[in-house]
Length: 148
Image (cartoon, rainbow, N blue to C red):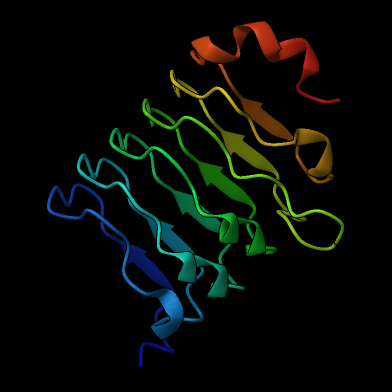
């Protein structure tokens, strides 16, 4: 239905609680959900966005978790979760298939994710060039283990 849609910016939509079904916009390349204060849930259909290169959920303070399907975003280059202060954990990385899971991710911004206790498995992100984890107080005791 929205095959031509490349950019979707829903920033500052305080009425947004969950993302829409992304199966209707398979060619989306840039998704911006910044400062959606009541946003809590990412629909599993996010895994359908095979062309998504930029995903920002900055300051989505009600977001607590991400679906496992997030790792299907093989084209993702920038993932910004800065200020998602209630995000507790990343989903477990897919078990064996090394071709899935952020294979092109270059920049991961987790700055001020104060509740983040379970970080992503960083050693699997072979293209990662920039990692921002300052202000993640719950990760302080785990920093030396991040790349193991």
